[in-house]
Image (cartoon, rainbow, N blue to C red):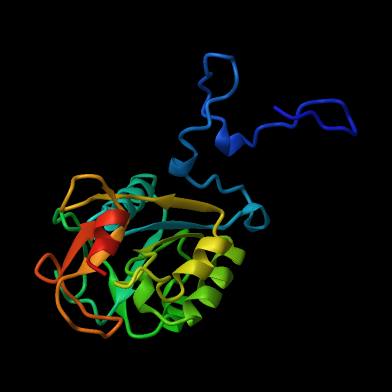
Length: 225
């Protein structure tokens, strides 16, 4: 660990990174920092907001992880609001549903700016399929986190061409915490980070599941490019 040149002491590990466990060399174990929960103070001035982004390809478990974190917040009796794009009706018109059919209630919205109006006094805001929103989502997430809310965003980081998708690259740059989850390549079984489109449609946004997309690793994705 580096030493502070001004004081000669080692910098302190932030409390939310210190799990209480020790590594083999006696250092704090920071491996579980992605599963932090908010520690709100006793007054509104003490509330600290931040942005978490869960990204990856299709079939990688993004929504599953989003639901897991939101359910933990609900167990902790925090006020939670969940939003998704109104256009995404693949599994359900209103609820957020993972590929494994885990479900959590949500509010479908047409525009990202509606989230500011509907989030109210909640502690935690969850946003699924963030790539389908326009760049207004960037300012929305900034305002929510600056207001002391924990904002958890899940979405595809790349489109079917392997290019950054919608507001996601900006949110990845701005977020305090980023988790990239991975699927399994349907062709070779390696770790998959790309969403390969099986149809000839060229529009950036084409809703579909396994009948239109499959997860692929880098080699298998580009070999059929």
